[in-house]
Image (cartoon, rainbow, N blue to C red; front, top):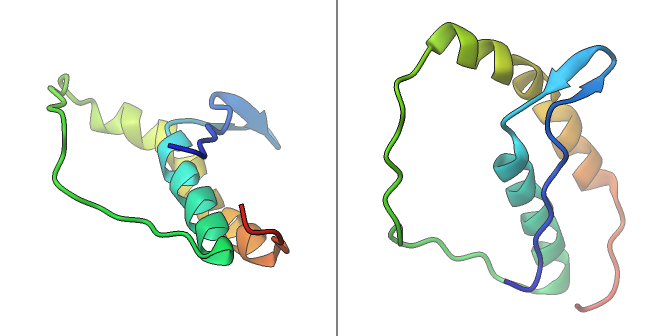
Length: 87
């Protein structure tokens, strides 16, 4: 993959912890850059199996709530950034 960026997780933003959104934000970044540079995003069948652990939904909601609230800000910011170049 020629482009990959992982957002720092477990950092505080205005006293809110960002957690578990690195893969989602990576997709936003990739899509925005590829759209502007004429690239393509393709999806296919999984190439691996992810055996999941037991879930604690209350704990997971706490970890994801901040990221959910920030999604609109991240998307709006990505859409407002001017990208130039072809690679």
